[in-house]
Amino acid sequence: MSRAALLVLADGRFPAGGHAHSGGAEPAVKAGRIRDAGDLAAFCRGRLTTTGLTAAALAAAAARGVDPLELDEAADARTPAPALRAAARRLGRQLLRAARATWPSPELDALAAARPRGAHQPVVLGLTARSAGLTPVDAAHCAAYESVSGPATAVVRLLGLDPFEATAVLARLAPALDDIAEQAAAYAERAAAEGTGALPAASGPLLDVMAQAHAAWPVRLFAS
Image 1 (tube, rainbow, N blue to C red):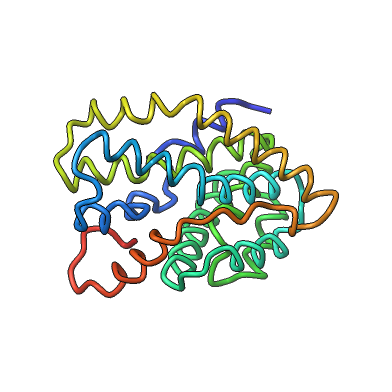
Image 2: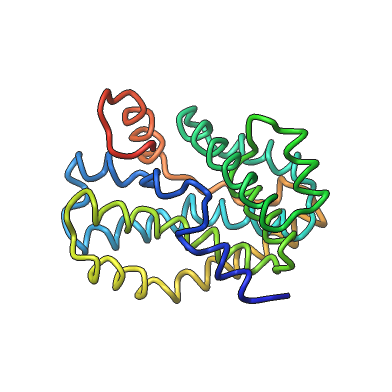
């Protein structure tokens, strides 16, 4: 295992398309739910412990070797908003392109053939981590971090928030990120033994509602 591979995968400059998505921050800013660093911290913590945990567990399970097609179906079932399902598959398709160029593997090729329109991004992320020689915990850390770094970066652009404050929000979430990653890896172990039904289905209903509304906006800065 190369820990440097984790740095490459988690780097915001990795060409996986995440920079075009706000993780629900754009509609939250417009609705007045995020106005400053304190609001951003609360938003990120809520996202981390709901959809972030679910995504991290899916990624960890894929890295653990659970069938990615079964995980993709599980991800569909855990993503009730059509707008978020579409966004997850677009991101998965872009990540899969980058992953196959960076860490070629038969498993990534098989997933690309089976899901030409894209698999859910957390599933692709986990399989990418596996192809890079990373562990389920590594995959979970990456997914958990993505769940909060996207909104934090977006709010800097949407509100003109001081980037130092946004980075401080992420740094203070470090213990929670570690905890979520460990929980996700434990769920992945259960899924390997019991099936995908053992994975968490934590969700953020307001994120789903806001995502559907955001998808209908005629003008927006972010794709989701």
